[in-house]
Length: 440
Image 1 (cartoon, rainbow, N blue to C red):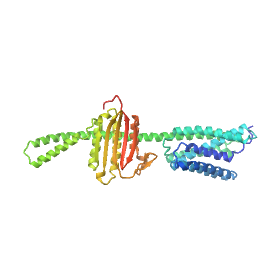
Image 2: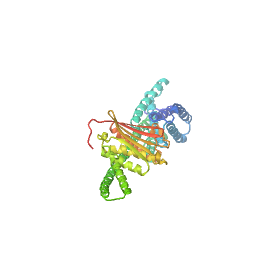
Image 3: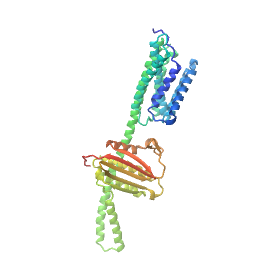
Image 4: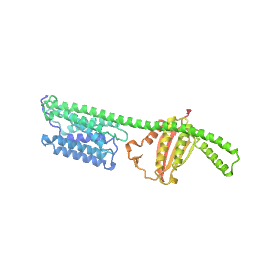
C-alpha cells in the first residue's frame, strides 16, 4: 500500500504539537508572571490554532513565511511565560519547533498506517492523539528537567544560538523537502515514504539538538565551576602573600622592641618617654590582634583588618580559631576572604566613615560551627527569588564570591543564610563539627 495517499496533517494537530512542544520547556522553567501563566498558556493555544487553521489553504508560496510566523509565536509564548532572556527563548523555541514537527509527523503517520483509506471514530483518534503526544512529551520533559540548570537559565552565547538555528533549519528543510518537490536525489515519491523521511529526520534532529542543549549546559556548569575555583585559588594566593608580609612585619616589630629597650636605658626627656610608652602599647595591641588560635585565620583577619584601618572601616572580631582545625586551608581562605571582601566592598560605598562597620564571629553551638559576617549597608539590596543580585555593571563576571562560599560550605554539608534587617547585612554559615580534627 505504498501508493496510498496519506492525507495532510490537520492544522489543529500541528498547532497542538507546537503548543505542547513549548510546554516541555515552560513547565520546568521559572515563570515570569506566575499568576498570569495559565491564561497565557490557554491564549497561546488559541492563537496558535487559529493562525494555523486560517492559513491552512494558502498557496504554497506562503507556506514558509507562515511557518516562520508560527515559530515566532512559539518563541514569544516561551519568553512570555518564562523568566529567561530573549536568547534563551529563541534557543528553546528552535528546539521546540523541531519537537513539534516530530510529534505531528509520527502521530499522523501512525493514524494513517492503522486506518488505511478510512478514518476511525473521532474519539478513538483523540485518544491516540493524546496517548502519542503525551508519552513523547513526557519523555522529553523528563530529559529537560534532568539537564536544565536549577535557575533555568542557559545563558546561550550567540555562537551556540547560531549553531542551533542552523541545525533546526537544516532538519526542517530536509524533512520537508519532498513536500516541495520530488525532483531531488533526497526526495520521496510516495506519501508514506515522504512521511517516513520526515519522521526519521525529525527524530534525528531532536537527538542532535538535545545533545547540543546538554553540551551547552555542561559547558555552562564547567565555566561557573572554573570561575569559583579561580576565586578560591586567588584567595589562597592572597593568604600566602599576606602571610609572608605579616612575618616581615613581625620581624620589624620584634627589632623595634629591642630598640625601645635601648632608648629607655638612656636619659631622655619625659615627653619622649611617654612617646615610647605609647609606641610599645601599640606594638602590644598589634601582637594581641587576631590571635585566634588558627594561623590561617589569623593571617586572613590581620590582612583584612589592616586594609580596614587604612580605609576608615571599623573592623571587630570575636573568633575561636581552634574550631576551624578540621577545615582545609584553602576552604578557610575562600570563606573568610570572599565574605570579608564583599563586606569591605559594601562599606567602601558608604561616605560617612563612622558608619563603616564590619563584625566577624566564629563560635560553636552544640555540634555546629557558626560563622557570622555582619556589616552595615545603606544602598537598597536587590533580591530576585531569594538570591542577591549584583549591583555591578558587568553582572556576568561577578557574584562568584558568594557562589564560592556556598560551594565550599557544601563540601562540609553546611548551610548558608543571608538576613538583612535595619541596614545590617548578616551572612550566617552553619557547619556540622567533625569529631576527628586534622592539624593545619
